[in-house]
Length: 107
Image (cartoon, rainbow, N blue to C red; front, side, top):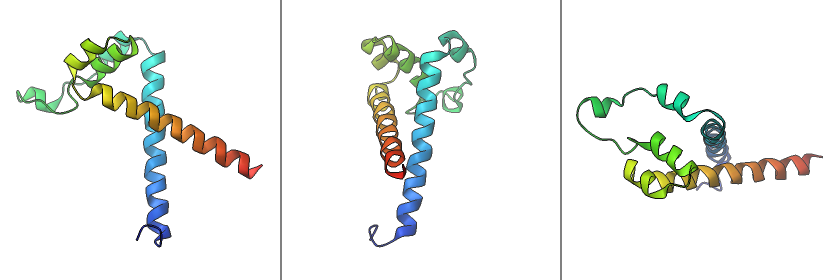
C-alpha cells in the first residue's frame, strides 16, 4: 500500500526529516551547551508533579551521563535512555547520509 501511495510516502519522509533535524539539534545542544545550563532550563514534568513517572522522566540527566560514558548512572536515571540515545545518533547519521547522497545526485 505504501509503495503505491506517493502522497503517504512523501508525508512519512517529511516526518522522518523533521525528526532527524530535531535529533541533530538535541545532540548538538547536549554536546556543546554546558550541562548546568541545560539542567537549569528544565521544566518539572507534569507527571512527576502528580507523583507519577513517565517514560521520559530522567532522560535529560541520563543523556548527560551517556555523554560522559557513565552507562550505569544513565540507566539509573532512565532505563530507556541508552536505547533512545542510540536511536538519536542512528537517526542523525542516516539523515546525514541521506542528505549527502541526495546532494551528490543533484550535482
